[in-house]
Length: 161
Image 1: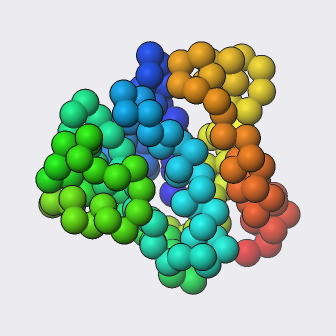
Image 2: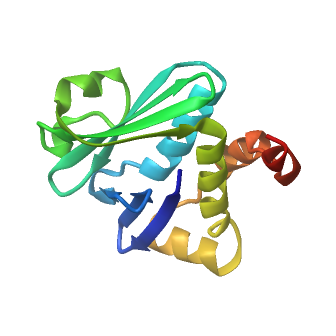
Image 3: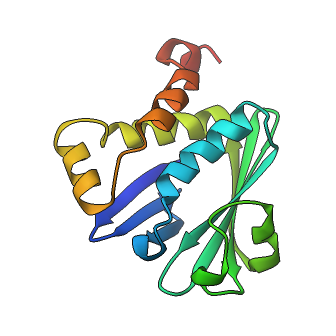
């Protein structure tokens, strides 16, 4: 699974999934979607939950991201929200009440997705990348990123599968 940060600019955070679907989040409601994404991945990796729901808030529309882990597999599904962003929670099972039609669905190995996310956020951990992230979005989610890096497969374990 290929996860790419497409843009961080003027209070917008854009994330691409497999070059097929882009999620956009505005900071107009102060939802830190990147931090919530990292935390959701940590939650499903530790089996605190099988499913996590996140709201990607536009202005004023929204899309709902469902992350489901089943063993070594992960499924991402994006739904149109039936409610405007300001009527949706930032995260949680209550978002199921907001979902409309399914817009995009993909499945892959969970460890591959984690590796993709860690590699992408690595671009913003230090130096100019971090300065851009923090000037255009907000504080970098360092604690969540460090914990996700700790469970990321290493090069040697990756190629031995």
